[in-house]
Length: 405
Ligand code: PLP
Picture (tube, rainbow, N blue to C red):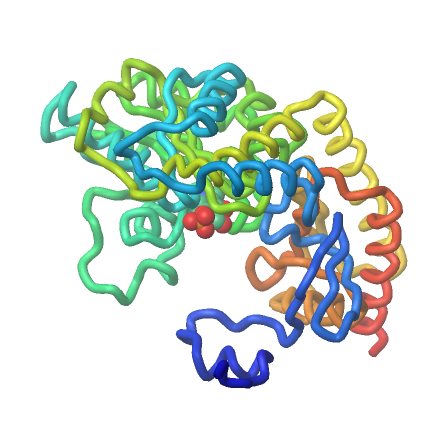
């Protein structure tokens, strides 16, 4: 007989490792940009599963792809290739600078592959001295030990003993600080073409172009981590397209699967050839189920109407946030690109982004934070305008509760 027990938030504390502190609300179903919890309370989703659910919840095209592939073939391993993986790879190659694709299961794994490839390329082409990786302070690239060390937040990488070596951190939007570190020993410079976790910080055009030029000068690869910015998030298919600066390696995950775990590393033929047979791998990478869903997500996002819609919805979000600020004076800046938006709390509310998130949740709205003083919004790229307006009504009530409560 199956044992009966209550599935609630308390159970989390009993059975789960305590590395997360999830909210008390447990959603059980979603449709579009709305989600319902165990008690059938409805929430509007401005969080999108941290920039993952690019087409909202249970988008018909994704459900169809999942069901169709689910009845055909789930898994093979890389001992064999499969049709969905080949189709998705072809579309990624046809629509980006890249000529080759490696599939992974997450952002961190995609970056792990990128960093290992950069090291291997440099070793093969130039020799052992060229192993330095430079990334940027406040950057975020995942939680494996290599990727978290490349990430620019020591709070995440400290406390696990000796770290992978030869990794340095420059300041974002500060070319001189990169210039001071880069040399012919540098194998790669890694950057997000808009820092997400680090506070929704856009690169200046001059900085992005300057990083590319310094990489060229020192024969270092430029790796763009587009795990958060990719697949339509900034209103371009990939953010590098809006910047007009092309990397040598790019990683993509999160929105790539629209909620199904999948990631990819993209690069050119010349670089890809250094990841020879047996040098790297993953049991699940390129899994048919994941790639079938990702293909449907990619096709749906990679449509001029969807991408144009992101820009229109960005304007709606920013206008609505500005109107809230006009009334309550809580933000010192509203920034970001496309539907990767940050509202930076002013001096009176420093350190209180979590309070705003909790208040929004009480008023039926899911939001995110990016650090202690920034409220982050990464909704579905196709969120209906009516849901933006209703969500912003709820957000205003949450802000009112904090300011006047
Ligand atoms: N890179 C960036 C820019 C991210 O924002 C994230 C996650 O937030 C990651 C990598 C890690 O992705 P994952 O959590 O899928 O490993």
